[in-house]
Amino acid sequence: MARPVTHTDSLRDQLLTVTADLVDREGPARVTLRDVAAAAGTSTSAVYSLFGGKSQLLTAVVDDGFRSFRNSQAAAASEGLRGLGVAYRAWALGHQALYRLMFGGALAAYADCRPDPEAATGAMGPLLAVVAAGQAAGEMAPAPVEMVAAAIWGQVHGMVSLELALMGPVDIDWAAAYEAALDGVSRGWAARVPSDAGGEVPEA
Image (tube, rainbow, N blue to C red; front, side, top):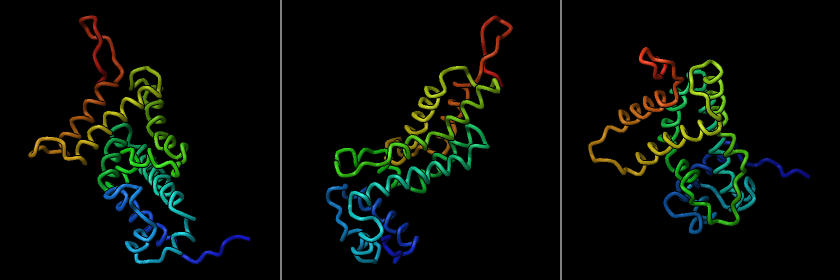
């Protein structure tokens, strides 16, 4: 018999958010369901009812994070490679604790939490599609799509991670630095055409 629905989607979303914040600050091993329930202003029975236990809750946090991230990328895909890059940073800045939890490795040693590999892999889908479309249109350099996508992701991920970790110079303009990085990505993977001197130059 199916478990009756006694809690709302808004409570579920709130529990996911406070869990990401708590785990970001304390680490997964130290956070208890009582902590989560208290932070959300609800009971542990609500957490059990919605998720089933701590490992399932942590898995849901990360899985929902990757789905949310993928949705934001899919929404920006029509704007091409630069649109994806802008959306990447905007999502990360808007979900900082969740971003660190998804990509920071905090759950790697937590054996009871096994996020869905398809959710994480699917997050790269919009980027793969944009790269493939750019190559088909002759706008991007011909190379294995997966390799190009991984290289681009690594570049934007590195910039965002540095910004969230506050690892740059004190007076750095992160928005400007990120725009410069996106310019470099676009130039670096642009298709090249022969120049008058016999060499190759990126397409304008």
